Image (cartoon, rainbow, N blue to C red):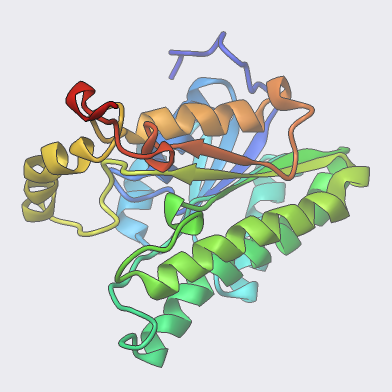
Length: 268
């Protein structure tokens, strides 16, 4: 891939992207863009068929490895594969995540534990896994994907919201611990993005398409975002162009957290 190669070049970057196999996800869009800008990328995910298809398409600069982000053993295996193929890791983008419906009271503990294991512990384990390699490389950049649900309460997403709030805390702790090693750590908080987190089939995509107008109506910019838009923000944070950014939250939500756009007739 050559598009965007001269914009925020990432030549020489070795990046791990978790959750990068989902066909319509932020992780896959990010992996594609990092490759387009010159990076070598290792995608880690549990969707093996989709991940292997992505490797077949971009295999010169991208490899896929099975990764359950909640497994220390999987992280160790992935790091061995990365270093063997491309050398030390200089970027980590933690996109892997799941969202299960339920309030704090109604969510079964098994569901809560699963969300926390993937969305929260997976981020923590990722930092632990890559930090020594980044230190050996002389530094690096870690980008953790949270959510606007990690900035406000989110009805019926009790465990997901709790985990995404925790990601912001993990980011700041890691930023303070790793700064003297030249490792930057930041968080991205997407709003409504056209991904497949809520389902894997054509029916779910059609449902999302039909609901775009409703979702967009709550966003001042009047639409939901695309994975590629989030990927461009992530690429900036991976690159040296963000060299003085660490421990920060970067919101990409079309103004959602700013509040609904008031009609002129509502003005006093």
